[in-house]
Image (cartoon, rainbow, N blue to C red):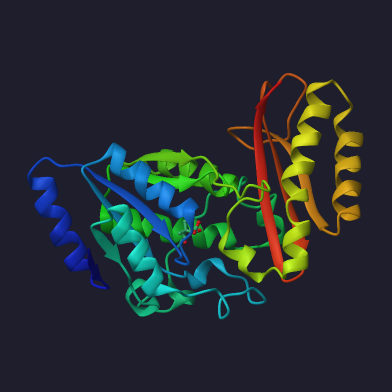
Length: 281
Ligand code: PAF
């Protein structure tokens, strides 16, 4: 696997593949790779001739009081996992390469509406940062297909919207969340949990499962959501939000919508956990 910080080297390697008519899958990450990331690489390998990954802890998507400095950085282990999964090219840029004129002077991409709600309400600017870096990485790598985890459901829908709005020539694919046997969705931020908190964390997924059942059974949505928040609190988590939305647009769900998604975020110790559940009514 070639690892490089240089945009020209990435482009040169990809050009040799494209000249031979070979396809490229791309998996952007912030590193600290777990089985969820590796499933993206594996799926990319199934769908394209070559898989390219990036590792970049993107300062633009962290708020001033968030965990940029403490975000786990595990480069050697990450490289090992990427090689084992069959990744052939790793883009590992520095902030200076990505934002040479500094963050304040950087052109940005904003997907309005969908970016300001749910996680965007608690993390202002987060999705602007994520959309901007993904757009920039797409322009550097120019992949045929890009893979993202469904765990970050709002991010996935924002990227799909950006790609459509800007007519970017890339197919965006969501890949199912990988979970521990407890149901807890794998996330780099699970590393912030103490053993005691880890035992409480699966309540997030359990609560979403129970809530979906209650809604499918015809219970009133508002009161079912209130009960779910109470259940989370009783389990030791502090809910940020639990919302029922239309699965594609993330608009508030109406009685007519059939394809739905429950999205939730909750605080537990130093971590802010998110999860979601897509279902049909
Ligand atoms: O999901 C992530 O890890 C990040 O938001 C992404 C897509 C790599 C952009 O920095």
